[in-house]
Length: 578
Ligand code: DGT
Ligand code: CA
Ligand code: CA
Ligand code: ZN
Figure 1: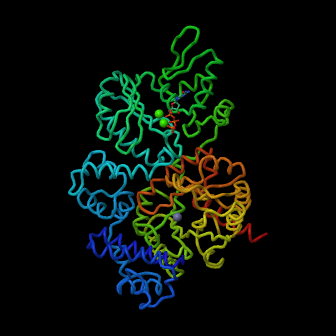
Figure 2 (figure 1 turned 60 degrees about the vertical axis):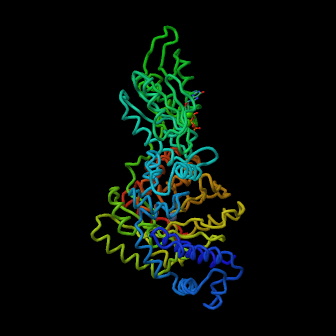
Figure 3 (figure 1 turned 135 degrees about the vertical axis):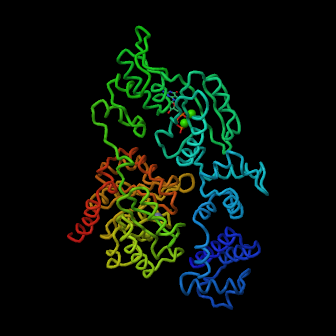
């Protein structure tokens, strides 16, 4: 089907969506929805049609036809731009929540003041939604199910979703009487990109009453197993949570044990055995006498076994114990090392917050620099033009004078199926930073895809390859790529590879980061934020960098502004010299 049909359909769908969110009349919303479907399925390229011909398309009336014409003539629709400005960003974020729909999004926004997925989860867990007009237990359950489905990946859930859920549970559990400490362990603490179940550890002297309280928490739908010190429950969104209560004196041993991973535990336990000791969730014991040696903190347990404390993100049994024994654990990049975000969007393309809002949020993160990298013209649906990019640059420069933060004007290019890019070299070289990503034709053969990405890497103006494998966790597999060839070229040309921090991407993942690092690749840990709350995704990207054993020197956005600029400059120099 003609691409222009898809674009016009997308425009009409957005119209319908925005109308619905802003409380527009149902009939009008439906008109645009129907027109969108009809246009998408129309057999001829509608960009070629005049008003009369457009009106012959089923469900396209004169209003719609004129909007389509305006869209193809000017690249935007005035009324749509106005609508976009009227809808608050918080509300637009909500509309993207699966299973909620624009009408309900509007309702929970208006009546409960909810502006984020997290807020929605809260309300869901407190059963505040079923009280709303037109809702009930059933609609609450339905929403819970679609939320879970949207965040699931083959029986597992995405890290971001699991962490939201765990934080909410911990908040409640910490408030129960007698609870001394409460924390998450398991794959969640190791920050794996997906989590099978959530493991919570609670320190308290008396377990019984806590077990009963946990079973009665509002977000608990069903109790799967109920023992004296362990309870397994299923949340209203269908995620399994194991809660274990341990005596405060053995907190460290229990955290170590239940953080895992299993291969890590086995290796650590073997060290103990060789030293005539026994390690369990209750502590480190002398085998001969049965005497408890240490148990209170993880540090003590590791230390008694001749090891430094090992960061949970490394505990996968893939060489960290050997490295620890030999005193060569990597010093990992930490969230505090990050000085700026290098991939973000605004409402000039598909973001939902304005430039001013995003920059204000970046300042709250205490960044030294911040890159705005809106989409480029070849992602035609986003309606970017050279003029718009230049206008944005003027606004950025003006804003920078009072903002107290260095703003980098960047762009996110589209790597075309043949590896070519938006804009020519002359214009591209005027950006402070250029990210290039694959946004289409994900199923090319390994040869084609590798050649495509390599061509972008060889381009003197491309500084970062965005979300290099294109995977969407649970919904789109990674592209087929010769990783080593890409890593080698990236290292040689000084092109950074992105660690996209969005919990639905985490791309590159920890394993690939680790492999790329051996080739000398540098990384940009970026959020790809399309809304203010997305800037907080950074912690997932940093954890992924850690899982790949990356240190601050490997991550270009830990650099000072001067060093970052030098890194960006060196690439084009090196390539032009050759
Ligand atoms: P998941 O839930 O599939 O994402 O992965 P984990 O690592 O959270 O696994 P889970 O929930 O089955 O168990 C949590 C931790 O408890 C695990 O990482 C290590 C520890 N653990 C569980 N079962 C065993 C076991 O049979 N042996 C040892 N050594 N450790 C275990
Ligand atoms: Ca688990
Ligand atoms: Ca578990
Ligand atoms: Zn992006």
